[in-house]
Length: 640
Image 1 (tube, rainbow, N blue to C red):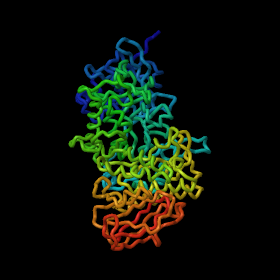
Image 2 (cartoon, one colour):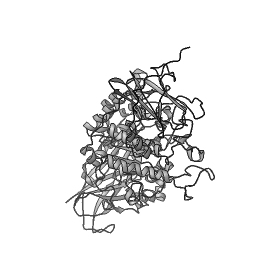
Image 3 (cartoon, rainbow, N blue to C red):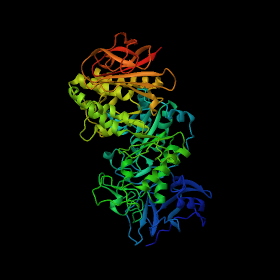
């Protein structure tokens, strides 16, 4: 039998420059995705694709694909000694070609075919091949997006799982593609007044039930919604209409599927070899070895890839708490202390600092957000001040306390009054986002509406009051899809939201409330300009546990930017309720969650205006007399 001839190499010249190899080895190559992986090009007049893969412990490496009958003898790769990188140029292979790497370990054993870690596109599950694709053109930095992402700008985030936001029931319940999403999701979010979308992970992933949080193709937008160029168009259209786009990003762990990164070249290359460091018991996944130069480079470059090549506004980094601690979710004896004998993962901490420094230096208009649930200090503090360097941290403590309080029967709330006031004790220790995310409506927790006590009317009133309290509280806002119209059932990633509920007045009322809350948030600087400055907040009434009422003032940067936020969290109308206020003048109702337009009882201060009187109350020389609606939050703007 005749042995197939290897595919022709370009010539004796190396395909990857020595400079690139040096930067890759040093860990300072900011964009290894432009060097490694599959890149169509013309070499000495011949069109083809350059393939390069890091597999330092492999004895042999070949490219296999639909262009060579998946025969590893046809296109063997050349090893760059000392760098551990294999390379080859294959003529006549271009975009759309399917491929994988065939590797032999150091003992000559053939490994399962491996998808390309740097692949720019990939097949849809259950298929697992990488797909040759062009590198997206860089998206120029945007001063407009930098202003929109600034700390003193309003930020209200609509969190979306694209596969279950809407589907096409008339076409078998198929997903919308990127262009259909741009035609529907973008105008919907804009109509409701959201400033940003946050998309659950869009990197290619083999298991729908992971919601994208177990990715294998970090550089490949999932093919569930079409070709990668569709995501590029989606982000551009969002920006053209003034809507930001954030991506959930998963650098903490990866699945152990045979075609992925697990034991990539026959050794623990991307992960730790010791399962006490390298295996995550909660998710049955593998943990990146953050102490390895090439792994850090791989992850940092992936962050830059989404920011630079797709132009997204920022990355919400998933599972940061699991990265920070070596003993995270591990019993005693099942973890390895750091070099000082402590529990902190020093390598992961260094990685996160480098990530945020790189993003700040290369893409200053972008933001990073940490999902971090512990009391680790300085998550959103700059690295030069000893912090991790994130722009924002999710306020998980606020979320837990708030949902616990609002889930209580109003008759019992007086015994737990400070569950709502405690958040202000630490509100300025970090730069917080207040999240009501997908994690709060899954795994038997029920929907937000279902967690509210009382009869149907009271459930809706409680939810409306919660949203009012949330939008009045310091911090940026995040709401998972379906929450904006009070989805009744728990979220199911396998089916669309229940859009028919908008035919019900109470559900439509909640949607109108969210629309108006976002309008008020954006219009009044007092509600956003000093989200992270103690000067922007003032308690007026924090101790009325007997009646479960709360009142606070929000201030803007300019003198006279003042908004009162008053909550009555019992089903009793409170008339002639006197409140001491920061300034004499008139206070105009700008939003009342009990409005008939939202499905409420339309109770409130007569004519929606309260003038001050020189009657001391709450330690202030002037006060107003209000009527507090039941189970409601009211916003009142000061005017002279």
